[in-house]
Image 1 (cartoon, rainbow, N blue to C red):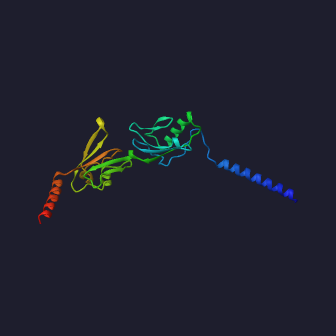
Image 2 (cartoon, rainbow, N blue to C red; image 1 turned 30 degrees about the vertical axis):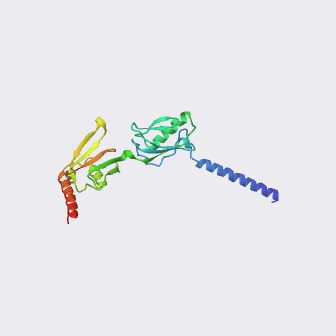
Image 3 (spheres, one colour; image 1 turned 45 degrees about the horizontal axis):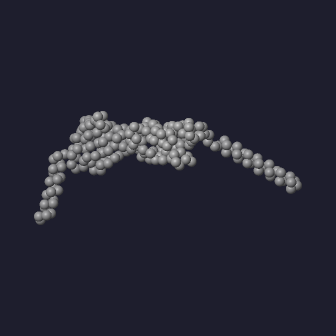
Length: 225
């Protein structure tokens, strides 16, 4: 084989290899259709709710990428396209909605991702005479006793016979009172709590008096040995 023939063979192999690599890459590359979106980092079955904080990213368009909070009406406000319904949608569904709206007028085949930064709509507030009052994240099926347990349980002056679930706001606000002791003893049903509920554990007047009296007595005993 002379030198020119060898070079010819090498060139054919090189071109053939490159063509094969290009063909392989084409078959492995993900296909995209107008309005497609990249899956967001969130559970597929999670449904966005009011007050959730979302991170919306439009690939290669920083001016359209931002962190937003779902308002009380269930919408998020996006540049160019305005308000988009968010509540009741999964992150992937909202990604597609935003991509479709952008694709209709402003961009060709935008890539949009939506992820949930803070699921405020899946939390309840536990207040009153509990060890650690605060907001706690719940899952479907969380009950009243479980929510109180998240707050480390009733404190020493709590009235476990009078625990309220406050639900809704304004004229739609309801207050239901439960006996935590009866629930624990199996005498009453342990009700399920819902997102945005406020749970209030009342104080026992007698226990509070004993606590306060004991505190005063301790101070007086310290002041007058």
